[in-house]
Length: 298
Image 1 (cartoon, rainbow, N blue to C red):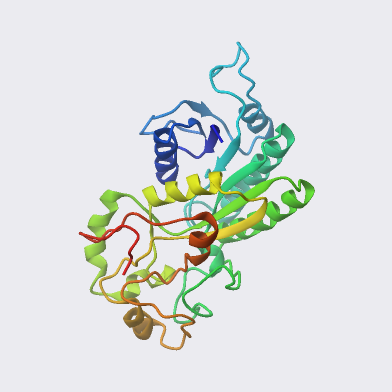
Image 2: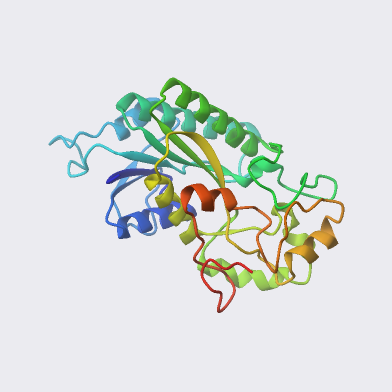
């Protein structure tokens, strides 16, 4: 994996992914509708809902007439472009944009011979926002938790996972790795965490989870490198929560009737990353806590 196309490379997670992959010595192309505020790699303006534009973006042969002729044919696609959350656009707009862009990227990749796709699914597929009236079935929530999309955004990600399974069935040598990303945070976002500490209900909606953008980028790199053929999905969160209360205390206060299927010592994440650790080798390195030991989480 040397030449990587990143869709949505101008977004919060995408910027971290592009920077990390470039620092790892990879050739990266950012495909997005707007340039990045952190231009570490070439940018190509593409509307991913337009199938022809997507095919053009992925069929790079290094010909002399191509605007980025030094970039060889892609080895993999990292698909992060989307309307990134519920309530940012009308439901039908979000659904149509996210479904068509994902279909176009998956289809174009297979047609031009790219056999590895790493893409952004979402924690919202698991039932977010969680509330006392809509609690998780159990905790820590893992990949076996029932899929319960509660918005057009979440539904687009749920159906994207099914789409990945079917594209793999049609292309048995392909690899589709969906990353169910938690709430992406950059370093400057950590200033807001103090305002949440007096009310556990503020962040109950995703079981107090988050993912540092740099650890999100690490998860992408590992998904690109892992020896894997198939279609699968992984929860990607940091090893701890956003709260100073312990995880057990948070569950007892907000979701007292939700069964705990495993011990949650200290501030251990309630969005289980055991599968990502085991299969991808994912190991969170960053935390919002001062003096946090990398990868510790508790």
